[in-house]
Image (cartoon, rainbow, N blue to C red):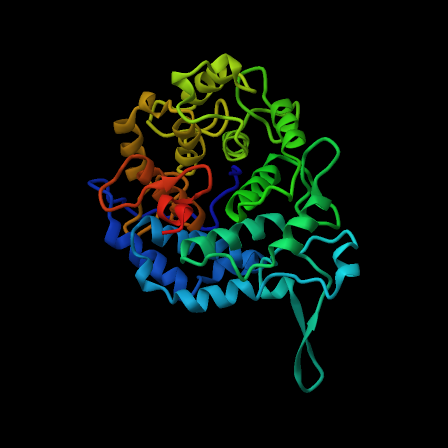
Length: 365
């Protein structure tokens, strides 16, 4: 969602396959990532669960989930949940969600014998969202998730203004974590983990004068923040389906201005930019395109132009880059696959846009 540079360096001699969406090569790209992450991802080890979400959900979008070991994935993901030792500990203000990786759950000592030593609970809202999304994607019914501890402790993260911290020891509060909280409650089919009315009020306070949403009240409109706002409102039941065919003025946000802002993000090269006066970027085809899909306004997208832009970012190695001429990275590859799902590419599974997983996974088939 951010405008950070790709994890890879420029690829001066990396021509794109501009003819068509190369599904087989993209599957191979994700299979390689599933087996072994390249060394540039070492610095993101603490976010391994998020990287796994990109790989596994990406394979599901490409209708290629049969190439992973589902039971092994389920066992690994479930092992990352933090658990209170007793009822007293459950009420100590901590969050009992999922750790982002084994290294955020344990550290290793070496005094002649390797021993795992537990470190303070570092479970995180974003990691918890990714954990549940992965479990839904591989067909788990979430019955083995300690949802009572998770949801009961998640309320500790919601602030008086309705926003959420991602971790109980304190951190920034913004729309990303409101979305994570809403998606977690939606997937668990239990809204006891948050005060929806307070969350709605916080979201509406983040809508800017131009129609988009900033991450916090008063900040610049941003494609990723706008997705988090709109998807959360849909999940919480504050935006109806087919909103354009109904009285949009009765909605909790300014829908016409939001649609106008979102459509203005499609640049002359066909791609979507995240903010005004920025270059088009692969990931915003989902962040902004997804907003338009949720609002029922995706029919106004120049699909031909968007497809053409995305194919200039498609790598000969499989995957997508942020901009044309760069090597692919996992983040932009995943959102490139999401974009082609929105474009109804053949042999690509339909996306439940507001949850960020396939419709099949969301329904639980």
